[in-house]
Image (spheres, rainbow, N blue to C red):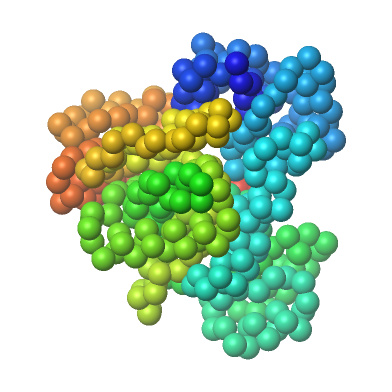
Amino acid sequence: MPTILCLASYFKGGLFLEECKRQGCHTILVTTQKLEHEDWPRHAIDEFFMLPLPNLARQPDVTHAIAYLMRERAIDRIVALDDYDVEIGAELREHFRLLGMGASQARFFRDKLAMRTRARQMGVPVPDFTPIFHYPTVSDYFARTPGPWLLKPRSEASAMGIKQLHHPDELWRTLEELGDRQSYFLLEKFVPGDVFHVDSVVWDGEVVFAAAHRYGLPPMTVYHGGGVFASSTVAHSSELEAALLAANRQVITALGLSRGVTHAEFIHATADGQLYFLEIAARVGGAGIDRLVEHASGVNPWVEWARVVVADLQGEPYTLPPVRHDYAGLIVSLARQEWPDTAGYNDAELVWRLHKRHHVGFIVASHDHARVQALVSDYAARVAYDFSASAPPLERPPAE
């Protein structure tokens, strides 16, 4: 029986664990004590270890803990369920000489500077950017690149820590505040436009499945300014869908992913109509995106990721399940109410509701693209009025 050890600094990945168990694997979950009482699928977890650490990035503590477990357990694969665990997962694979993504490649999927540099080298359009290393180079960047600009942490997620700047003086003041941490940031031209995400399954370097969706408000706007998070399927067989899927394949090929899943983001610039690559992660999209993809296509990225890992582990071919070409829309928001009453949302196309304290969320699905678009627009407006709340944006993950 193959053994798969999963790392989770955040509560997610239940469907992955369930599918691994269904495929006959021995499953081990390593997480932190603060997540002990989350609703993990304990029926699908053979061994559950909670480390007394703020997160799983603490080294060498995590390596020591895994080494201790391996004294009596033959672990075949290590899988990082959360974005913040991708690099530690890669370090552990290299340390214990296990197959899978190594530390160098993991940087392409966590470090925004690494992924942009590699993408640009391979001919993928990206917004103009510069690292924060050499001040004369940064000054030259300002001289050739009109603002506004975005100062981005290289390894955060969910638009965390991003600052919009309108004058070079703002940057120099911010860099002074950052001190020795400034090299962990990059500077990028702000490009207005519609933002899209493409969620993929990759096998033997080929994108065997990809689904393109358009965000409502850009994620950065929602994260920093509040509002309703929304996303909906791009029209099938459209020029836009074809362009997004082609750009997504180009990025994945450039970064060299062999097997796994990805969540990539692109922006369709208002000014020049160009499609620019923003970022990519080697994990499943959050905020209910896996359910959105599933209701539009019949393919759940968490489930397929587990099937890819198990097929790879057992030396068997991976086969994608039948794919539908329907449409779905996702609406999610923080809520003022502890448990929002959503009984008034009852359209026939409503296929999923989020059940989480101080949150509200829905997925609508239909064969009709226009119907989904209309429902997403209507629900987003109603949710904003009935429930929506906002919280101050975090500059970095909660203290740990």
